[in-house]
Amino acid sequence: QLVESGGGSVQSGGSLRLSCTASGSTYSSYCTGWFRQAPGKEREAVATIDSDGTTTYASSVKGRFTISQDNAENTLYLQMNSLKPEDTAMYYCAIAEARVYCWYRRYNYWGQGTQVTVSS
Image (cartoon, rainbow, N blue to C red; front, side):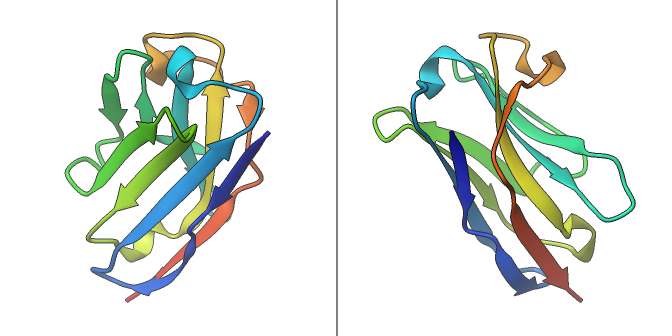
């Protein structure tokens, strides 16, 4: 079970940190990632992290967002800085049953999502 938290409403240029806590899984053994879906748009990958710590980001967030995980706490994070109105979306964490090339994997386990709204 994945549970996200940390969403909210901020002004453009602000920051938020999303968290995703897993029960029954060990993050360090699998691909983990953050995805988002804006109204009327398809879900898109935001950032993924391989079991060896390799990170991959969408070009639209590179340099502004940072994905990380705390294996001891079994928690995945997404630090979002310099937020823009176009970052407004429902954000989801997910796990794929793989260890590498995580950006390209199919993700099988999903959280319920947390809303991020950025106003101009």
